[in-house]
Amino acid sequence: MAKPRQKVIITCAVTGAIHTPSMSPHLPVTADEIAQAAIGAAEAGAAVLHLHARDPQTGKPSQDPALFKPFLERIKGATDAIVNITTGGSPHMTVEERMKPAVAFKPELCSLNMGSMNFGLFPMLGRFTEFRHDWEREHLENSRSLVFRNTYQDIETILRLGDANGTRFEFECYDISHLYNLAHFVDRGLVKSPPFIQSVFGILGGIGPHPEDLMHMKRTADRLFGDEYEWSILGAGRAQMPLATIGAAMGSNVRVGLEDSLWIGPGRMAQSNREQVERIRTILEALNLEIATPEEARAKLGLKG
Ligand code: KMH
Ligand code: ZN
Image 1 (spheres, rainbow, N blue to C red):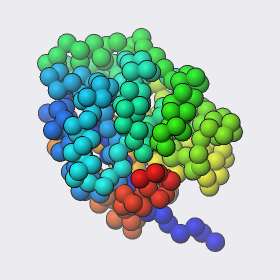
Image 2: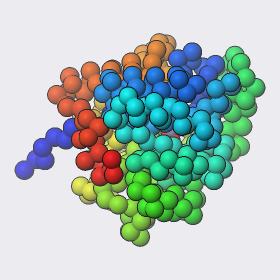
Image 3: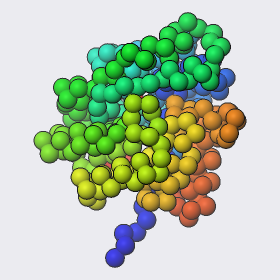
Image 4: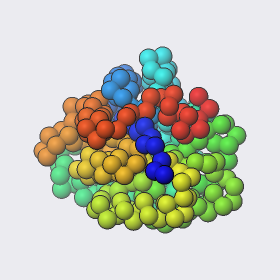
């Protein structure tokens, strides 16, 4: 008998560390902007808020817990959404740096990147040419020669931190090999079931954004984890809405937000995170899918609350 349809968890990734302030006036930078954007996304239906911080003067990504604290307090005061703190930080940072806010705040959910990879941001130099801050151009330019480091040792350290703090993970899988890495840690008993797999499509250095890529990810995850995983889809840039839609029609959860795409349509910038959440919500409801509340998402993902 077919399994009953599950409600869809919408994650909103509010600002990230990939896009830079000169690329969009709508990218949240200050604690106030990040809090407002996150609260708007939660009001529109996001059960999970994936959060990074930025230096308020320059917009440069930062993992300083002091920059997270003010927006975490405001978000927790205004919503019951699940707070998901990045351990990916920026590909330019050390793993020790990246772990700081997870250590400080012991959140119920954190991201965990499942393999080392190239992370090619330099193609955006063709699309965005005017930058207000020097770091922005360097951030894109330097991606030609950096490796986004996530060794087995790094992954194990973050998994053990999660175990000690009651934190569970959004496992960021940018390619098929990352699913096999996750299966390796499941086999070693270091990952609690069901893992929440965020399949990431369209980052240069990872799997592409073709529907066949999505199918290959899904088939591989089904083979490795059977029914024992929660699947979510993240398409970068213009792949955001199409891939989330295909995935949701096949039973996945979805992630949107300005971390992953600055756009709402061809040549049209999203005015807010809320706008992207509203768009995917409209699509999901048109597919007769129901949206998970934060409490329903906590139950699905086995979070501590
Ligand atoms: N920026 C994304 C493609 C993280 O924060 O750990 C994936 C991400 C990484 O969200
Ligand atoms: Zn992130």
